[in-house]
Image (cartoon, rainbow, N blue to C red):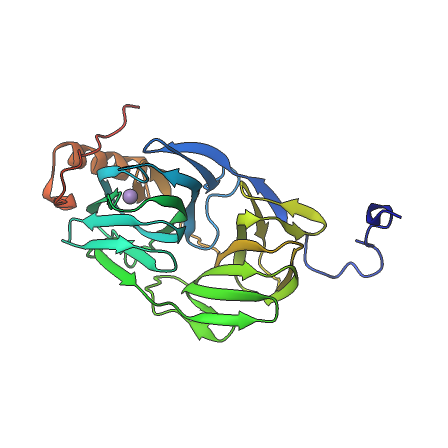
Length: 303
Ligand code: MN
């Protein structure tokens, strides 16, 4: 008999459990000639915690001088979090940072009032490129502050009964990342072994599960790369089933109550504010500094 003939009983008996996960389709977007799966922002869900932007790229083959190649561009009011499963990216910013990002490392750049950066191929690497770039909205208390850059070569790792976890940001299963977090935030990379793993969640947080590789089965529904699953506040655990194993990103945080306006590479609080940042970029204002690179500066998009 096929197992599909006997679906697990769901929704019968006790209905006091947490609400079902809300599955969301990523939209495909072009970033520097590379197609990415963008899980956030969505029209109906702008943020999960303070996470406001989730791009998943690859795996794709890096040709000579290929890969991520994005010239200098500005940011305000957000932190960028870059995390690779495979490949290399060269980060350069207007603070003078020059850092090769490698798999398992965390690259965290906080824009505050403003900076600029470039993300380039190392020129040496050949092979696969696979990773995520995430943005975290800064709260009012820090968003006008000085820009900053952190690179974490080593991150806390935790072995769970059915998964290996790497803690990028926040605390998970007794381990705490030393990465900066301006709001209560969680970012964990989970390497799920075949089977099912129960993961404890902070009930005051909302969460987003982003599948990077393999298939995750959640509430009997398959979640593959290009789909994500939103889990609302009030859950203290989630059962992650991956029949053949999977790589999953677990993002979370306290719901971000400030109303943000995202435009191009800026996170602000009004259209006027982000438009002003755009004018300043076009005018090469000192606000965004200078990136030392031969890559061409990215102009403001024409809207
Ligand atoms: Mn950027």
